[in-house]
Length: 256
Image (tube, rainbow, N blue to C red; front, side):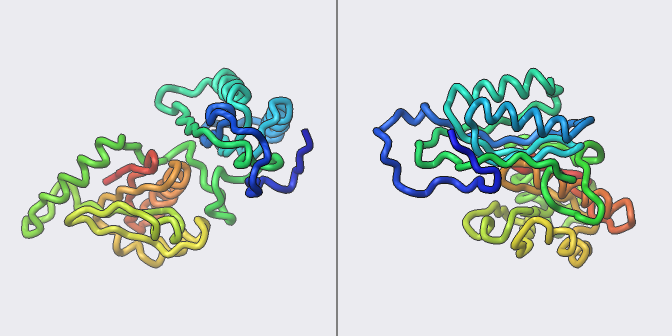
């Protein structure tokens, strides 16, 4: 098949292929936080594998891990997942959350982009954020819901105690949070008006007072932005910004 290295945009034209089972093609999105000792070599291996499996999409490779979105034949996607699992052997606490979805032939990515980058997701060009250390603890969806329920029944007139009040931070871009978001009684929901994720550090610096003395429960779309944002919040706290932060899954997480 023919591939373009400078485009990973999905095909949007109407397919002329005969109708196929939704399971014939799959999309997979994932990220994996792990030490990559030789990102250039990893990127080369990933590129060769994706080419051999006729996978399209985009993949970021850095010293802190992998972050990708790919499409292709269902069997090829499964082979890719098996290769990554065998090569990187994720620890149980860092198990890869493979997000799979059926796609049609007209929704396959055109071209393949495998890039060596400084960060898993662009956040801080001056000093790359590494989620290998100091990321906030993850919470499960059930615990995320429980924390919000507990905050909803907290007596606002009671003296501040342990745990501190909760604040909900949406670290997605503004257009994403406009479509849908979490809200809960007695919980302030912060929605930074971001056009892109790299604008988050400036917003946090300007609004650190809102986070002071609070637990921060955050969410995003796939989890990787929460990983980076929680590290940034903890760095701010270490500098005396009192940001705090809990990171997480689909993106959820918490820290006192």
